[in-house]
Length: 547
Image (tube, rainbow, N blue to C red; front, top):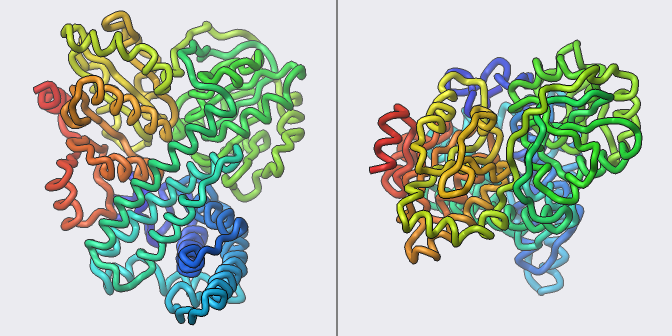
């Protein structure tokens, strides 16, 4: 096993015995093999697409495979093995598609090697031997640290983009150009001749692709549930039976709300689902009772104290504790061995578990916080914001957000938010906001000083807000009084970072540590090109941004 795709990777160099996330070596190695097989599928699918041939089954499998290999998503080795074996069937389908397109065009198909020729071994032990042969440390030796790391950077970005694309697909939104871009980029990674320049280009293309994906997901979410608007959310429980839903998938939450209507069960969001309350068609359900708990890494303690059923959607699952494992369910791409998995959004088992559990016996204090400041809501007061900046009432904007995690040093983000001067505004997104979103920030120029834009994918909203401000002030985004203070944890944060770099955004501060997979030469180039920098001391960083 070797894995360094998340920020908390062991000692900042890589997990080699067991994953910090709880992933066992066999599952981690099988996931590497699944990605290897995916590269082979992409090699044929890219060529078939360029010849005018596409296939929905190939596209669906590709998104599933990428999403399944993200951090804190799928810990089920049996399911990963099924995906590997299914991948060989899909690869043959892509190869036949490519060959038929060549015949129709009167051309001879290329003879492809490498991942395109991968055939899964017959047994689990043999699969693990195959995984050893394509492991990252071997590529580090043959390709060098920087090239191998750049390959990983691109693949991780694609994993994040695939997660967002899958959420959109669940709401009926797809884009043929996104699949085309996915295969084209994976084909570059699979090509042993791709050097540092080609891979850096692929990384920025991944950012461009993810921007398109986030726009599609934004359209899917707002088309299904309306544009988010500022909303007060209860963060203390209500008396009664309860279900808590964690993850990212709005379609799962909506289906559960429909199935629990009139059953006397309160439904709570957790983690990245908190922004769901901002969508008019979701908050219209009166039993969407509020938000319970905080960021993903607190779930073991929070779920142990939750007296109802628990549904994990999309990702962010941790190893379940015995205290709640009997009330835990998964859906979509997220899986844990032994935990019941919901198929086809039939939540009857979750509802039964909630009705059998005691629920909350009394109401909490009733504390509320605000969310729902998507780009549509913020742009509706753009004139007020612009005038506040011009008058000097509003001096600076800070985007303080991204993924949270358990590594020491993440208190930097809460300290930074608390230190922001009163004439400045804080925008936030992702689960990093749980470090400070229950604190009182007051107002500036008649507007809330803390604006919760939404989930990590709502970086799209933040970008639209920045672009609107740059147009209003007739300047570039980098010339705005705006500083990005980003926390990263896993692959969706990598995808968002690549999107920002693709858009030419400079001076981003990122932490709590820099990615282990970014080699020295790559880091030097990112610093020289984009002035990407690690977070440092709160006081010094704040002074530098205001200067």
